[in-house]
Length: 112
Picture 1 (tube, helix red, strand yellow):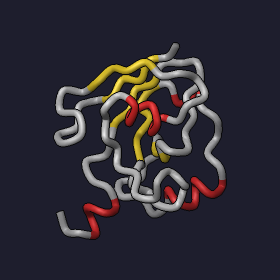
Picture 2: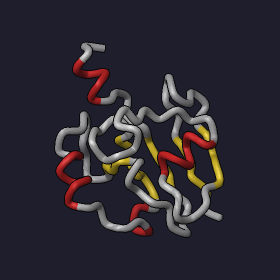
Picture 3: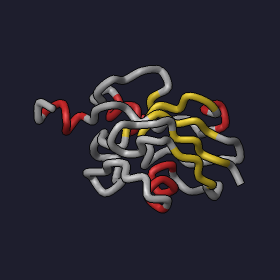
């Protein structure tokens, strides 16, 4: 089974983490199952951008983002070419390296 390597994030996983994920599960579900509390304000219904992540390695193994995901990503804080919504991104058979952004759109709008 593929591994997901989460790079260190000051609040969510300060030491970083390496987890095993079952192909077919979303990055968000795999993270939550392993105690990595990625924010998901819309309860993983593709209606917000709080679960935004950067796919730093392994992105070529993932399916294309849907038009709905792409439209929402345009609203994400810190958007870059590696951006995906973790609630919509399904793990395939390749290891991934994930970076969780420093802020979510909720944090930015609350002036953190």
